[in-house]
Image (cartoon, rainbow, N blue to C red; front, side):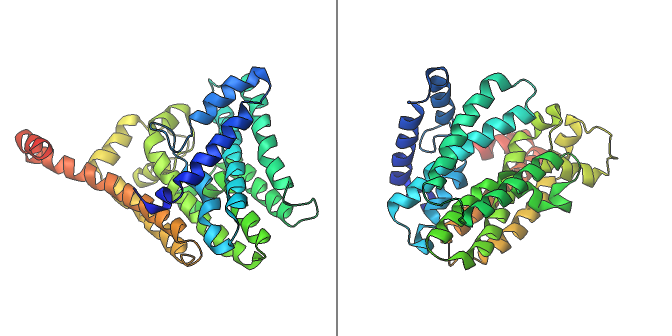
Length: 311
């Protein structure tokens, strides 16, 4: 297991315990649903969604900000509630089967906890709230325009900005530690890390996104490679051909390598952010190479494939 995670297991346990305690005091109609939704993202439990950067970024910044354990954990707690809020909003926007009547009131409770933590640190006149407005505007623009352009190739930062509120960790830590000059560089590094994270998610979600007609960077990449005209649908069979026969993931992964170059520039300030970026680049490349190697084994013959997998 990577140090960017293992070094913070105790922090994560403390923070998720506190989140569970807060949600357990929600009004009764939302308490059970809130705890169930929080449990889906518990970083230390098996089989859960692992949105690592949301929980860990405030902790990764502890070294360069010199914030106390208490403060960095509080910002991690804020990020958990921010994640839950935006996940519910995204689900309502992307999933036609979702129930806004159930999701939106619960989302509002998560948002209240999210912003309350920041209000306890930063008064209304603080420049922190300028960053808050900026990140919220980035998010709103990104989620509203993602069907209109190929973000990966034409505007990759649009992919990152779908998770722009994560960067509140940067603004809060650097302002509290009197280092506002680092915010721009760290913002950029987080953006490019978020692009690679979205690329990985899109590999896992492309079938569902194709069915629901949601933007997916891998689908957009294949559409561009196959020169499919705008307005013409792309079939699941064409996607399978591009992925399993055409090695498109190898070329898709080249974008992740370019993203990591930007992240490396701030490695002295947040080495664990850099390591997380490397981890994702390696994972994406591993998926692409495994598909290519398995195909080559099948071409050589079924017995050769079976022996390689089982002996």
